[in-house]
Image (cartoon, rainbow, N blue to C red):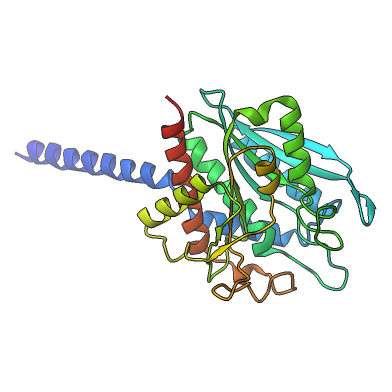
Amino acid sequence: MFVSRLKLVLGIFVMLSVVAGCRGGESAELFSGERALQHVRTQVLLGPRPPGSEASGRLRSWLRSELEKLGFVVQEQRFTPRTPLGPIPMVNLVATLPGTSDRTLVLGAHADTKRFEDFEFLGANDGASGVAALLELARVFRLRPLRHTLKLAFFDGEEALVEWGPEDSLYGSTHLVESWVDSGLARKISAAFILDMVGDRNLQVIDEVNSHPQLRVLLREEATRLGYSRVFSGPEQGVDDDHVPFLMAGIPAIDVIGFATSPEGVVPSYWHTSEDTLDKVSASSLQAVGRTVQACLRRLDQELLP
């Protein structure tokens, strides 16, 4: 009798362990806002990260190490654009996870912070949040890879060095897309999702009007399905950001950004100030964006490939 009961208890224990393991596996494949917030913290501790700075180099070294641990192939793209401050060396970091298809999906974010001489700009939201989201997305897609090849692009030189304009902004994304056009890779890109300023505690992701129409619909459909409609309730608005070079090259792209200047939206009061610090960023905002983008890429992977 004792043996029978022992077998029963052991059987129940094994069954519960299997269920718990399945649940654990399922949750591990979902974007974690807490993990992403830790990645924001790591970047902020490096200090300001403008192009050409020592901190910018340390950031790339850390990203390379984390991405290579996940099995991504990491490459640096070095270039020296002419800027209003003269030639400044810049470096894009591109991480690739090969798929079973020759088609590619791109996730992008700018890794630089805006250069300020009169105060310390840490860029917890404006810069670090997008990078953190990409790094956490790298983890979840490594656990369950896409059929598409996945490229993560960490752009240098998104910010203007003096004054925003066509000749002083988007240095890294422009250079990278041009190189992909020249190599023929651009023709194989199914879509590009650019993440910028996605960690604000009171996040309102705008409906960016220059983005590809179908991707705009997809983003909001998945946000609604997952229960994140409030986070994605920002107004329709056009923004000049790292998605623009992709669009100009004919690549479907969308800017996922919490930045609104219309009467219905609010620019974060700390934007481009010394107050863009870790306390302005929340794990819940990062998770809402991360899981929505994760769902979008899964759906594109299923619908765009036979």
